[in-house]
Length: 388
Image (tube, rainbow, N blue to C red; front, side):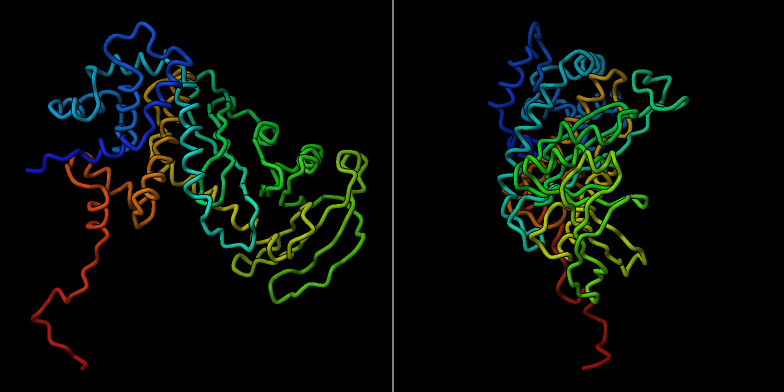
């Protein structure tokens, strides 16, 4: 009999408990709490994310079916759907937001040496958002359109390791460009954005940080060419120009010289035009930086498909934000475990292996290695060899 720890326990032991307790104390999360602490709440919601539970009743039934194991998994309070619902509604979501920022710091240190695929030493970010649709009658505070509600998940992604360094949650009406004021973009870093973030005043503020940007240009942008650099058209680069804006408002908002790179994407049969304030890198690198921006789209796709953020266990703003921040923390936890234990395979594969073996008492590294092990010998020994 294996007397070791369950997969779930091994995973949650990778979380910094002391720092979590500091977050709880900061917002008095356990004030007048007797039976179901913030740690119990985190364990329940983490279990729900890892195993993709459908509802509070589903969480309660699944956990209570393993009642004898709960104490050894870290649970100290009784698990009931009403208690969990009350905790999600009333306990400050900033406990899990601050704890998520702590995990972001841990993950970034682990992945800072990752190969970006570009000849750059600078940190490269991607800023984007995704919309999570909601029912207007159930979530009236998240009004988006006349008959629709939604929240937006704004993310600044560090492309070395695909680690979210900033996460902002707003209602669906909030325009993406406003998040440029809140996103903490480091000096001397590069931020790749889609043209929905094209605001010359904010781009100039980013330029004065000083930081760099790569952004899609709009078709109706008015400019004057100052100089054209020679380009190698076999790489897809069609033009590399130094320009100034000529529109009164745009020229006032961004009075300095910009770099305009026109690139033809053979695979999509599409012409793309980029603007940047970085004059010290090749034009092809500018296009490659924007291409790397698609990692943020893959991040949104991953968490929507494999974590529980499209349907919610509570309807209040606090419950929704609590669930989303715990989901992001689980993404970060899997990324941290992958790096610390040197696990092979993608985050998606690792999560699939863990979720179906969550109560197994086996070492995580051995579990994932066995699941990824491929058969090297011929499975059918009676099969004749056609060619020798």
